[in-house]
Structure formats: C-alpha cells, structure tokens
Image 1 (cartoon, rainbow, N blue to C red):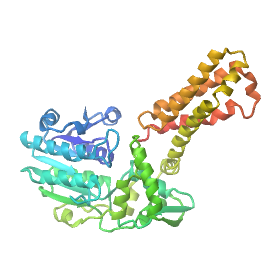
Image 2 (image 1 turned 135 degrees about the vertical axis):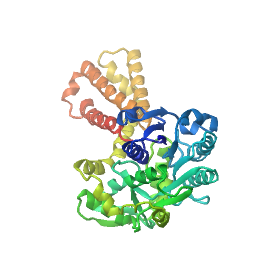
Image 3 (image 1 turned 30 degrees about the vertical axis):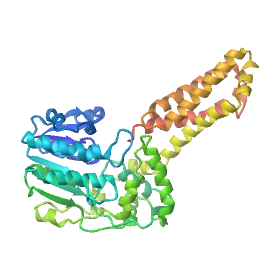
Image 4 (image 1 turned 60 degrees about the vertical axis):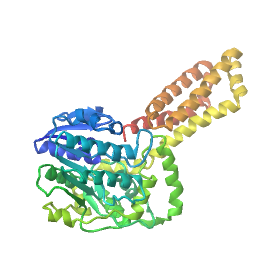
Length: 431
C-alpha cells in the first residue's frame, strides 16, 4: 500500500513510519520541516507542508493523491509561535477527512489520546475529540487509536521530563495530587497502526492503547530511576500552588517558541491522570500493550540516557544564564556610558569613535541577550555571542594589552560566556 503519515518525524510518527516501512509499504510522510527527517528516512517520500495551512479539502487533494491510506500522527500540545492547536488538530483534520472521502481513500487511522472529550479542560483534548467525532461520522474504514503515556527511546517532551525527574540527585521532586497513569510502548502503538491499516482489527471503532495496570506518578518516575541505574531517592511532593508559578513561567516561554513539557496542558493532564480501557482493543484482536517495567526493559538504558537525564535539567540554566549575562552587560554599559567611553579615550581613541564603539557594544549585547530567549533565534544568538566574545578579545588585546594580567579583566569575565555559548549551540540540536 502507499500510505501517507502526518507528523512522520515525531515521537509516534517516526515509529509508525519505521514499522510500516518494515512491513513493505510505500511510505509518504508530511511535516513542517523535513530536512533532517529526509536524511533519517531516505526510503520515504517527504512532503514539506504546514498542516495548519491545509484548512480546506482542496488543499489536501495534491497531498493525498495516489495514496491508499492515511495515518495522522500530528499533534500540538499547546498554542505558541507557529503552533495552533485548533488549526492543526481540528480544522485541518476535518478538511483532510472530507478530502479522503472525496478521493475515495477509505482507510484512515487517527492517533488521538486517552481522555479526549468535548468537555475536557484543555484545548489539546477538546480538539482531538472534535476530530475523532468528525471522522466517526464519515462512511470510511476508519480506526481511532488513543494511546496512554507513550514510552519511547526518543527523549522529547514528557519522555525527556521523566528521564530528568528520575535523574535528580538525592530526591525525586514531583507534583502532588497527580492522577493514575497507564503507559504504552511506542512500538505497540506503531504495531497497532499497522494492524489497523492492513485491516487486521475491526475498523470503525476507537481503541484505548494502554497497559492493564495503572501507576501513580511516583511509581513511574521510580521505575525510570531504577532503569537508569540510579539509587532510590526520597520522594518530595511539591504542592500544586508552588508548581503553578513555574507552569505560568513555562507558558510564557512557550510564546517565545520553547515547547516546555511543564506547560499548563501537561499539568492538567498529570493532575487528571492518563487512564483508559484496554478491553476493547484486546477483544478486537489486538495484542496486549506492554506494561511499564517490560516497556523499560525494551528501551536502551545506556550512558547516553544517564548523561541526557542529568544535563537536560541544566538547559534552562544555560540559556537563561547566557541571556541574563549579555542583557546585564548591555544595561551596565548603558548606565555607565561615559565611564566606558573614557576607558577608550584614555587609550588614544577619539571621543566620537569611542562613543560609537560603546554604543555598538551596548546594542550588540542587548540584541544577543534578547535573541537568546527566542527559540528560533537561539542558534544565531549563540553563534553571535561566540563571535562577539572573540571581537571583544581582539579589541581588548589591541587597545588594552594590560588586561591580560588583570585576573578580573574582560578575558576572565567573558570566557565562561563563550564556553556556555558553545554549549547552547550544541543544545540547539535538541528539540
């Protein structure tokens, strides 16, 4: 079959794409930025599209042309720059389903989520339910799959946060009052998609993909901690009123493009729990999803995992520290403009040139510090910080070589910033 997978490079989409390729199907995958995905899966045909812009059936017809089935693995946790939950998960999906009906593409698999309902507290769950309901009204060979908490080798979003929480030294700090959680291995989700596409389970039904047993959040994190090889740690329950300011801060960062797993949608989901009924899936002929501990045994527990878990918590400190360093540097220069210009004039630079140089430095510092806070601009800002540091060193060496022997001079002060900028540039690859 020729199968189109939406979100083919995501946490679930990549696993689905790999499983269907192994099964011998011809794969077409769609995503907003497919450059890296093309290198990872050269066997698939990649289409670069913004799903939010495909709001009419006519826009979907060129995309689905020649396909025998469509699998939707795309999703947006929360609104942000370039992310519109309703546009992606509701409006575009309704248009896609109508286009499939018009093109007589009968087989559609919709990846939804357990807990999706019209009266859910989050737009993520409400829009998932709206798309599910629209699909169920069409005379197509559709299947709706609703995974629980997906465990995967990929460290992204919630899977990254679990590794980080499990890697905290000495204690496990978790939000209090979290609801029960049922997990599922990402390979089980991919296999369920294959069975649905190939008609091996009863269609025109919605199935929860969850393990039989439910766990509390502390049990899930403790299992991850043991999987990583860390010793047990004392549980510290953080009251929700203390968590909310951090969540509000992460929501603010979301407006700058940072897709933190600590945003409001995630907190609501953790509070309400992630549970479903595995019975219908089994009765339809589907294999039982793997349980928590068995799923972890199937994941690689390597030195890379331990490094990631510990260092992921440092990422906000690195990015925020760099932004603060350069912003403060610019503001200090602005407040002490005359003193900074005097340093240059004392070394033979003309007053006009000294003022221009100080003003340029202030603007550079403020622009780089502000750009570091914007996710899309962060790699450019980190590169600019490295270049700016080298420029300051060169200028300092030329104008004030005596600063080489000053232990508190510009070289010592800016060296940590340059090294952190290199780290930030490396972190830019982690999405």
